Length: 549
Image (cartoon, rainbow, N blue to C red; front, side):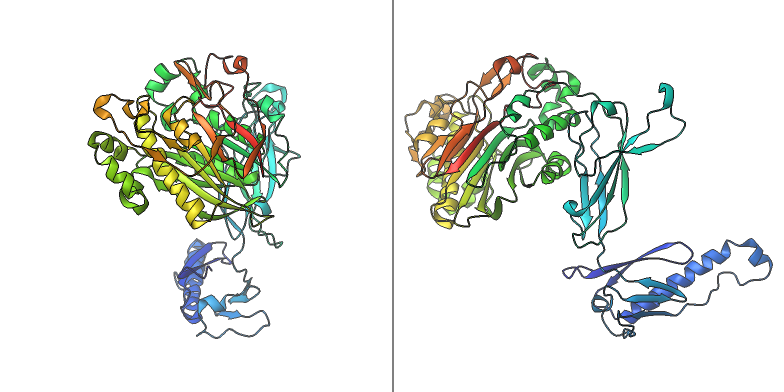
């Protein structure tokens, strides 16, 4: 019974063992609901009677059953008046009488609505179930993990047998000893107030498989074993390679021909991604190229188990987008201010001047407005010091090598919008701007962000030739620096390597404590390039520890 919904749901088991589900209006008088329950009970009794051929042969009435008396009594034993609305009548501890049967009312009991295991299980990699519940929370549920009984003598098992493991946590990491065996999870929903609902069980569709051995991120985890203290922030920015792009014929044969086909499969890559991201013990994670299904079914449930709350913004007319995760015990979400660049440019008054300038260059304007790129902006507040607020921006700019002029316009829109949030809505709060900018350190885009302006004669205004020249002088008020510097590359594929990803921070309010070293060149090129069996993306995560000044 949820106050904001017009109906409530009743569920009970009749004496004949059949389960009844009923939807009733919350405002309906109790008497009408009780009458319906009586009718259902009579039907159930009648159907049970029909099953007895002997009873029919002896002349018993077929299909006719006395309607049982149905009453509802409050916790103190008083009969509840039939004119009382359903919402007020069905209270915890009340007792429903159906004939001689008695039912104790449990209002809004914990219940699981979904319990699912990943399709791919690898030894040494965390298994994070997707748990959805009503009137319960995953952190209050009980988890019991089982493994398949290995058949004696290595033959086929005569029947299913399960052995309980010692694991009783939400996340389970199978050992190498479990390779070849399936897993089973039994979850009991709980609400944190010692109320538990009926358990559900789910079995893995396939067995645990051998992991890939050493991964590119293993050495990085040595630096990130623990979460930072409350005065510090560990930030991650990472383009995780959307499945929608990894599975094209062009990707398999042209972009990543060196990568084993199974290592491009999203089920395989998700195992690596979840282990990699969980091991960074981050406070803020900004991801790009996140498939909606990967966010909903995989990353959000997995990172939730590690204390991170996720926000998702899909690109316009696309299947992938941006995700921002923040550590719940360090930050709370104050507000979200996401935009699509093209839509904001046309409709937001603060971009009016830029829009008028762009209209002078119709070829460029058309390309800018065709782009699906978005900007995800979240304002967070420290849970320990409410005076500390942070504007976290996340984006993935236009990809084309000759699209420097388009990216400059996108950055101009982004910086104006961030200024609106971090200067106008929240006076002078620090900014962190993360993402895949598809721009090297020598580009106009990088110069624009880090220096605060771009001249109208910059070469990137003619990045796609004179016919698409778009000369403007633009500026923004922030003093931003690249927290991880200018690595040799953050993207390494067969035909290209370069630094495209950045974590820009407000140099006046934040400073860098440490930058987590990138994998060595030898590690990156072990399997020629990225992605590979030991690295789930064609990009490399940027990780740094920051502190408030």
